[in-house]
Length: 386
Image 1 (cartoon, rainbow, N blue to C red):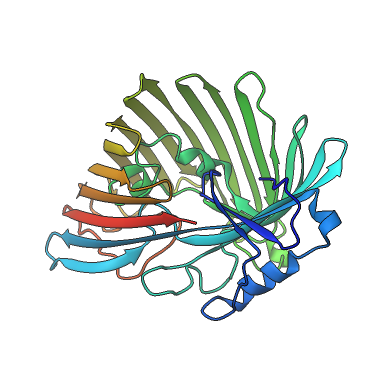
Image 2: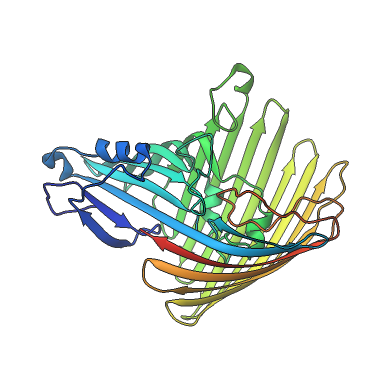
């Protein structure tokens, strides 16, 4: 987002995660007290001469999402706790652009995830655990990105589920086992052409960060998605091929989903996912159907059902189903409260399922289901965008 007014001080255009401008902090003095040293260093690095700023834009943004939940798994005592990242993953980030001329611009994004309930890092092993990439973009030819970035599948997930693939209420969120972000990646995002948009991503080397060792040279990731949106209709499809040379197998995943909006109030979502290992050791199928009803711009209700067929060779199956409901109310453009209910029924012989607060940020003290058992949970949360 570009700030067209020349100023003597660096402007941080504070935006909502979806890109809506909320307000602009002008000439603020940022203190290092109570803020990560890395955050201050990034902000200081953004200070450039006034002439260069005329063609550049830097945006500081973030989300704080904290909720209280009560979860009860059959055969276990119920647990009440505070947690982070229910509806949105708590995060802060810096993104920006620089105009290069001729319709081209440099783009970048640096994003850190944290747990708002206790202030800890979402990923103890890396600071910029969510995104760290730089790219070149053109309105005519699209954008190329280099670095750690969101997978095409994860970008699409929020469009094919009434719960935005988040909260305990989303069976798609709780059952989905695909990629979220990819290291050492080269990504290409096409411009929108007649409603179609393509996103391709390739990564070679280490499966999950670190140096590319000789034994990792065969590891490869292919991710491609094609989306179509026209009026009330959205359709998305994605394919992933992830090769692990160390374990000598390849995981293949195909996803198809979409949504349709009826007037100003109703929206229906359908999604299907199939994942299979090349050695037939695992095979999962996931189906989900959900809908949302908007009482007003601020008030929204969602209800959904998901079914998981999960087979692991030698370990039986972990089939499960879930129903969930969510109500959210926007107190302002930047603050929303939400409440969820979820009931998960595990019909299989394996115990491996939980009600997840968010697929993006892992939380401690999850309560797992028991074979043939169930879990139910309620949550009440507050999220603020800055």
